[in-house]
Image (cartoon, rainbow, N blue to C red; front, side):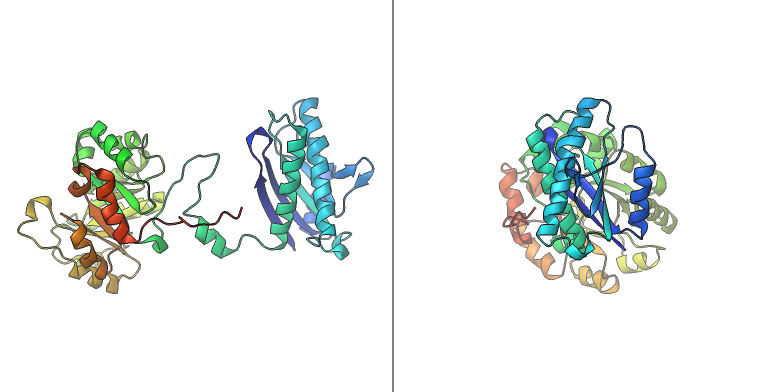
Amino acid sequence: MYKIGEALVGKDNEVAHIDLIIGDKEGNVGEAFANGLAKLSAGHTPVLSVIRPNLPSKPYTLVIPKITIKDMEDANKIFGPAQAAVAKAVADAVEEGIIPRDKIEDWVIICSVFVHPEAKDFRKIYQYNYGATKLALKRALQDYPSLDKIMFDKDRATHPIMGFRVPRLPKWNRPYLQIALDIPDLERTKKIIREIPKSDKIILEAGTPLIKKYGTKVINELREVAKSDFIIADLKTLDVGQVEVDLAFDDGADAVVASGLATVEVIDKFIYEAKRLGIYAILDMMNVEDPVKRLKSLKELPHIVILHRAIDSEKSEKHRFGLIRDIKKEFPDLYVAVAGGIEPETVPLALKEGVDIIIVGRFITQSKDIERSTRLFINQLGGDIDLKRVHVE
């Protein structure tokens, strides 16, 4: 048996990142420990952690550099403050009861240490690696993180080095507001995006007119001002479903839309390809007489279905909000969206039926006050999340 721990502590070039394994000498960790000492790798030479020369910490700990050591300057950082920090953290973990005292002769630790080549401040290297090692040990022996923690954070977190988030649409955050960017003018569309308030409830849609004018490459253009936003490519695909999914995916779309009027064969290929690539498949049921029947005819369900009233039919055609419950009764995991002339006063009617996504275009994009118009909807959908979240890491 063995346990695994990880921790990132600090900032700038002195930031410390520790990955470690702790386990029995007689098991897999012990074997890997012996191999690490016996089979040296150029630039990644392992060393026992010592509090000072001739005083190793227990459980015995092998420090392995993640970054290739190219010269003595690099070596001094690893085999000086980083090595000492790991050793002291292990010793203190025993003293504080994180590591049981009766296991110090039975267990060994393999600790992978990151020290940036441009790190200069030895005190910070020590401080950050000490904190990261002790935290990683505590996490390992407490089986951190729990599955609940992972599920809570996976759609909220932003990786600090990547610098942006690739969002999904988790169920716990429903309902969402999807803003249809249908104006075929790229610069005006970018201006609209800049005025939209930031919210985890908002989805952006590269509308069909915008894509028809600029192609799917417009999604890459929108990413300049919407780096971390969920962006849908509204292709309304009727043919060559697999090809059109690939085009949108290559240009950075998080989801693609096909028309429910396409043949079953086209829709099946469309959905298969979207799921294969890890993006959302959306089916627009505009002019589809029986959406439930159409869904039952498919090999695999899309992620989202849209009950869509065409702009040109708004005066003669009513919303089909009653179908929301019919669809969700047959397909409980399917997200249902409504579109077509949605205004703030119609939102409660859709919410009452269980809608997951409200799609709004002109009311927001042609507003003189885009932020205010957007918040009229967001406030009805439950407001922004995490406003009172306590920082614990």
